Length: 334
Image (cartoon, rainbow, N blue to C red; front, side, top):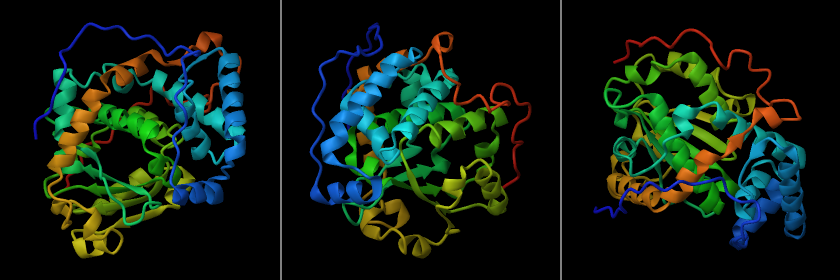
């Protein structure tokens, strides 16, 4: 599949202006309206007032440099089931943790040759279909696509957040119904996946759980190596209590087991599905990231200014966040 590109320029992007003309909130299908009302406490008549309250709070906070677009902020309302206090905490955490992860949140140009090479690996692949339009969206994580000789885990997480930023902005099904992750570890040695610095891994877990408005609905592991239960226990220890209660299934190498949860109609050929090869979706997302290059680079100007903070840092209790010694040593896994 050919991928069109624009030439790399030396553009400089500033943080979004708070008085930018707002794009109207998208109309959603009736099935999503019902789900949002029943499960997320959404009331169409109060959304405008809630969004005004959030924007007023962000302006008055002094320390948050964040997006003011209604559609973006609605994602946080839905993630927090329209609890204003939870929205404030999540938004603050969202921008605070991003400010202490420059290795993830800087240099996010999809036309940068190195970043593009990581995108082309296709570790994170949102799949286009679900059985029902109000089911969780399916995200495929391909562990064996991660080439540890070419890049490190922060580089993979960078692309993961780039994709997540576009899903947050564009995908109403994702924001209302959540996401189910299929984590395919492949048939090669996965030892390089676990050579992480503990401090960074803790930051990454906060970024993807407490800070992210993308809600997890389940974790399904396929093609798992020997001793995987030991590794899974380590990562469960990094999950929030809420995520530990989600569906977590290790299918071993059984596609039949996986298909009990995800029928072939919503899976790529590599997982016994009918959607064709996964590479077409890798290529589509490469192009989508390129098409949204300005938006992604613009994110680099967002975050927090701790010198202007008048409230408690939401990460204040994470005493080891900035310097825990130690790493996950390479595990001998076949």
